[in-house]
Length: 263
Image 1 (cartoon, helix red, strand yellow):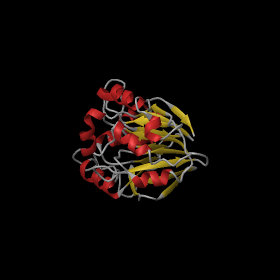
Image 2: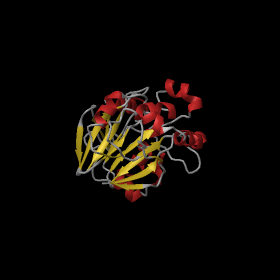
Image 3: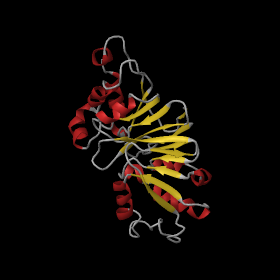
Image 4: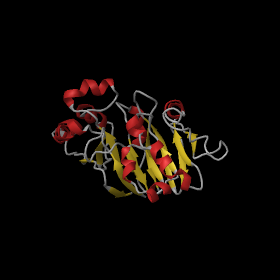
């Protein structure tokens, strides 16, 4: 399975795209502004979009992508999300005020998009990939995902704060790489707590939940552009021996748009 990072920033700025990952050619995990870097042919090839939650930085490009290629597709684009996320899309985006209701046009029987409800703990089988819906703790209904094509799992936390249920499941999976958010620096840790995001201090606390003996690359995503350098310096400055135990070092890296991984 190929994972292409289209966007992994917590906000926009030059060369900063918000969250979206392309699995192989046909599945998007979130649809932030990074989708805008796909060609029309690449957009047409996407048959499934799995959303973590309804916040704008994770859905901003979805209505625009549908508008760009829907008339050239032979079947509806499937949008998978929690019921609360789909309600938000219906009520606040595809509502014929902000954007046309593509779930009912050109006809309700043959629309440009179809909504599909998912539940935490569910595993979807999509074109040779198994994608499990993981729990997240955020200000709106939210999830993470674990995706595999039969070997190791690509795991994405989504937007989340402290999340014991997530780590319980992670420790049961064969993780090839973990993508986890750290949106704010330690100097804004109170804002991180209020908005249910992680700071480096909270990240360190969360990584303690990884079972002994389990080790895999950890990629940091969703940093605010104005704070990225500070966040990464704070993470790199963690005393890992003191935090995680003697003779143990997590392999923590910064995720960048444009990176591609084979899982």
